[in-house]
Amino acid sequence: MTVKELCRRAGIPYRVSGGKTLWVAIDPLTVEHFRGLSSQGETVYVVGGKGLPDRDPDRSIRILEVLAYSFHDWASRECLCGRGFFV
Image (cartoon, rainbow, N blue to C red):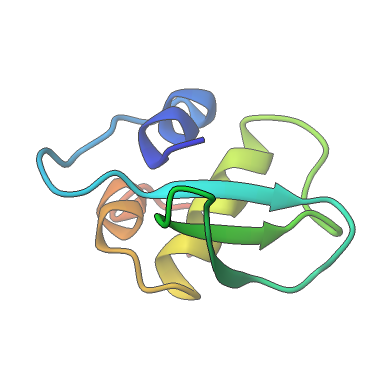
């Protein structure tokens, strides 16, 4: 899954262009977030699935929030910025 796909699921515009694709995986067995490597050697950001909302758009917004504020991903933060989600 990518940030662009998460934005589509959340119903918000994907506000960035260019740059490297950020790959995201959900681990349903943990609450922890961590960075790993795919079998191709690409970085994958793993978000703990326990405690996430069950349905979109809330689930995708929460995953974007984790990417933006736990992993400091600029693209995720830019897509969430000014939307009033975290007032």
